[in-house]
Amino acid sequence: MPKFYAYVAEKDGDNFSFGKKELDLIDLPEGEVTIRVRYSSVNFKDGLASTPNGRVLRSYPMVPGIDLAGEVVACSNASFQEGQPVLVTGYGLGVSHFGGFAEYARVPANWVVPLPQGLRLRDAMVIGTAGFTAGLAVKRMEENGLRPGQGPVLVVGATGGVGSIAVAVLANSGYEVTASTGKQSEVDYLKSLGASQVLSREEVSQESSRALEKELWAGAIDPVGGKTLAYLLRTTKYGGSVASMGNTGGPELNTTVFPFILRGVNLLGIDSVNCPMDSRLQVWDRLAASLSASQLDAMAVETPFDELPEALSAILKGGVRGRVVITL
Ligand SMILES: NC(=O)c1ccc[n+]([C@@H]2O[C@H](COP(=O)([O-])OP(=O)(O)OC[C@H]3O[C@@H](n4cnc5c(N)ncnc54)[C@H](OP(=O)(O)O)[C@@H]3O)[C@@H](O)[C@H]2O)c1
Image (tube, rainbow, N blue to C red; front, side):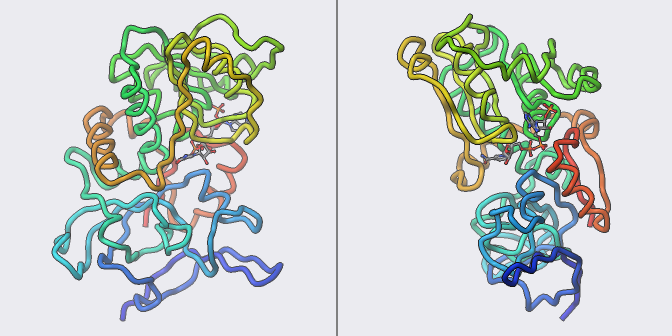
């Protein structure tokens, strides 16, 4: 049986460790599809998984990594061919089932997505869970009536993974995009992705005693939460949608019912993990069709497998721009 390298999180009482180890194929969990992983990526959740109190991993020892892309090495049913390029994100990957921070993975066949036409394996991981979540948010907003021409769509936390892909997908789909960021040095980056206006993080996280403020946004994408989500609900236009998928700015929400009952604002919860496969495939096809290789390259930072721990601690400090791709 070939040996391979993986990052493993282990916890025994108060003793936590996260480091590179040699594993054997027989150490992998059950599943119909064995994959040679070529790329993974770094998401905020992966950062949490590498810390003792991240509350992400369901059991130990665990190979984290909620994203992977590679080639099928073996499939015990007829779902996939040997050599076929595939990707996996979400479900239990890297949380309750060994994930993408390993040279090999074995997963259930019904978690596996064939690599969408037009994407390279690396592109799939520039997108990863963060980008998939942005794509799912745009789909849900459009299902709730969002269309180009209704006014600006605000993307907050815009230099992050979810935010960067959201800016690019919306702009490429004909929307007027306003981005907000805590990194004033990245205004040009956000404009290069398609934002027409860039606001500061402070402007979109102000508190107010008013339940409703001037209607500004046709829709909003919110990976930040907390005071920012309250601001978005107060300032979204009549009938607009706010997609909430994250909490880098805090998990609490202090709001009133008035945006909902006086403006018909939709608060859309976005969950990428258990998204059904039919929607999942639609989102991947939309992302593949609407993002160019040069745009994806512009938001990608490639990091070798050996430097994964540094990349994980950087994302927890909010210091990452775009998407970090891990090369295995
Ligand atoms: N629901 C789901 O299925 C799902 C899927 C993927 C991600 N998420 C969640 O979405 C969030 C973003 O994920 P990500 O992978 O995009 O992370 P990321 O790459 O680290 O981006 C998060 C961005 O949030 C902003 N930010 C960081 N700290 C902040 C603070 N204290 N206050 C306000 N803004 C702050 C920063 O953007 P600026 O500097 O540009 O402001 C940062 O780049 C996380 O909470 C993650 O867990 C959820």
